[in-house]
Image (tube, rainbow, N blue to C red):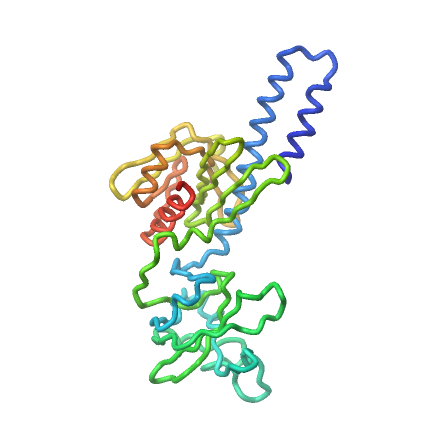
Length: 324
């Protein structure tokens, strides 16, 4: 949905209203501005829902395109819940051609995966889980499509008992990352700033900066006409329906809290309950708090969420990137 096009159409329509008093257009403008905020909130909520679904359920560090950071590091296959183990592992292979840069993903009689299951789709979860590997080399993978250029890699992994195997790495999709990094990784301060999406409206010059979503939280910075505003979007789930409610609370690691008792809470139906969301403009004091301290918990009305240390650190890193 294009907010600006809708806004323009409504504005023209308002001022063409016959016999309108001077106060009526002003009232219409107020309605339109509120509508723009509602539409923006819905857009952010939609993106948040998609991102929460796509998030790595184990919450582990994902290097993205900064794949070199894994070289010579110790990794091991992630642990998954009992319900999900049957779908893993799908990205481990036995052979990789370093000349053609292609993985051998199909074999008529011989297995192409380590500990290959009978259906040939996975490696046996029980035989790979908990095994530690060192990342010996990193190769670019031959792209299937031109759009895959620079996004596909192959990791050469070594385990003293298993030997050398290969991991099919996709730098774009975190949910598909089946490795847990065991080695300590020291990241540069601005490491996550490249994750921010920047868009410029060629018609009005508005520039938006959007951070990825972690534990249902993300930030949006809007620059327009020399003014800057930073917004925070929060998504939480609940099992009961509560309509027309208000109230947002964030707890920080230093014991401080950010409280917005009048923050409006939107609600949408979810598969196993309801999605609650809030969208607020942050004050400078709130921004400074979020830049210094990790968020540990959030509440929308009566629906609470706990934010683990890793996710809280990412949220803190993103607000520091966006609020420079």
